[in-house]
Length: 103
Image 1: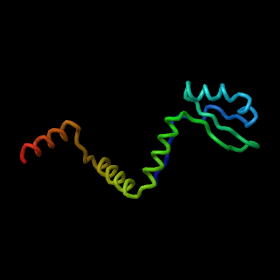
Image 2: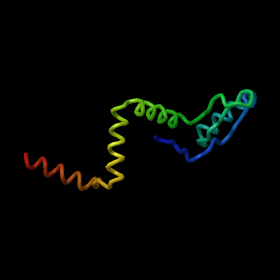
Image 3: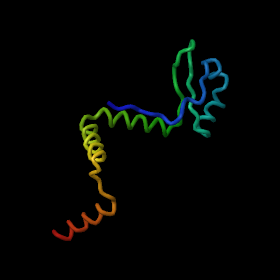
Image 4: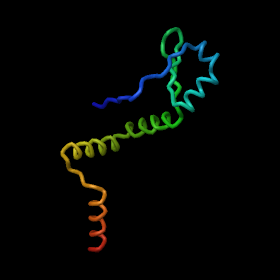
């Protein structure tokens, strides 16, 4: 139904031993340069290091997508958008001003 497309690939893949040895440097890469680090154990992905704000955004997205009412509202909005049933912010502001004046 939905797919997530990431603009960047994982910047670095490091085995757990290298991760342990270079933890400070890798954390700096993530925090300062916004790199992503995939940590492997026995050649298999085990964890990912991402900047905190990206993690928080993923958590928020997961929370929204776990709420059926929110998903339904998003689907309605996307359908309206695809049918070009949108208005500009200025038009909305004007319409609301007119409604308030009519009261």
